[in-house]
Image 1 (cartoon, rainbow, N blue to C red):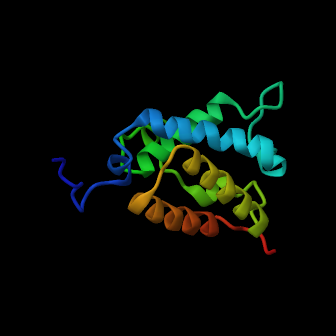
Image 2: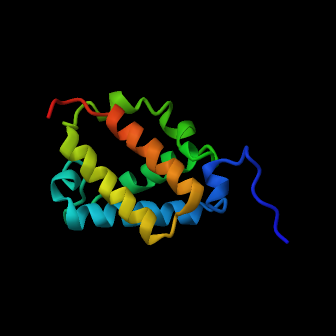
Length: 137
């Protein structure tokens, strides 16, 4: 019989301690953004073919892995996230916030993130996305 995760488990641990899963969620997130939210996709670094760059995807994957409680992959290379500063160049209103959340929700659905960890992530991601708003609606 498998023991339930400890109450102190990080979201990363609850998601299976899987860097591959987080990277897959990020890839799905950006693919969905390109397909369904072109205005949001256009705010990201794009390659010569108009696709969101691998560099952008890797940086976000490293951030997300670390933010979820996994290995420190982001800060050694990029320093403190300083989310508001790094997003200041982009107009983030309620429409853009909601588009971002739709893409992330889609990606988590596709990769079957569910249960307590999903409830927690939905709330925290919503809080962070709202915190990054820098433009009135």
